[in-house]
Amino acid sequence: MFLFRFTQNVAGVARPFIRSRPHFRRPILWGVACTTLAATWALTRPTVIYLDASPQADADVVLDPQTSIAFPKTITIPSKIKIPTAELVGLGVRTVSFLGIKVYSVALYADLSNPNLKVSLNLAPEEKVSHVVHNTTCVIRIVPTRSTSYTHLRDAFMRALNARLAQDVQSKTITEDEALTAASPLRKLKTLFPNTPLKKHEPLDVLLTAPTPGKPRALIFRDLGSVENDWVATEFVLHYFQENAPSPAFKRSVLEKLTPFEKQ
Image (cartoon, rainbow, N blue to C red):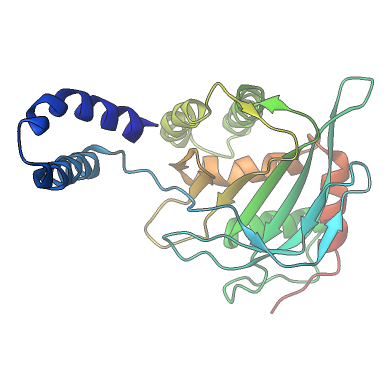
C-alpha cells in the first residue's frame, strides 16, 4: 500500500515534466524514481526479523476434537534464517467464561530431532516440556475458532507474562537485573500487534528460535515482528504449561505426548 501511494504521488508530481519530454524517456525517469525509492527504503527500514511466508505442511493432519480445526503433523517455515522442520507435540482448545466459549485451538510444534536435545525418560513430563522449550526450536500455532482481534491476544499475552515476571522476581527465580532487562522486550512485544482483526481459522504462528551461543533467543510473530530476550522468548511458550494453564486440554495433550519421549 505504501508503494502504491508513493507511485501515485510520484506520478502526480512528475507527470507535467514527463509530458514535456519525448515518450521514450518515461521508462528511464520512472526507473530512476523506483531505484531511489528502493534505496531509501532499504536504508531506513527497521531491522526486524520476519517470517517470509505461511508455514508449508504435509498432507497428514490431526484434528482438534473440540473444534475440528486441522493441524499438520509437521511444519517447515520458510525464512531467511534456517528453521528446521518441527513436529506436532500436542494441541487443544482455549475456552473462556463459565459458558466455555471456544476462542482458539492451539498447538505446540518442536524440533525433536535436534542433536543437542537430550531428554531422559526419568524426567517428569513437566520437566520434559521445560527441557524441550529451553533447548530446541518451538512453534506455537494459534487458530481462532471465530474472528477475534490482535489486541485481545496481545492483552492476554501481556497479562500472562507480567504475572510470571512478578512471580519469578518474588520467588527469586530471576534477579531484579534480569527482570529489568526483560522489561524493554516486553514493551516492544506489546507494540507488535496491530489494531486489526485476526480472522476465523487464520493461523498465527509464534516461533521460538533454537539457542545460539552468545545470542539471546528470538520470539518471532509471523508477519508482525520479533523480540529478542531469553526470558521473554521461553516464558511465552512455558506460560501455556503453568498451573492455571490457558488451555488445560492443550497442556494435557503435550504432557501425554512427552511422557514416553526419550532422546539420548
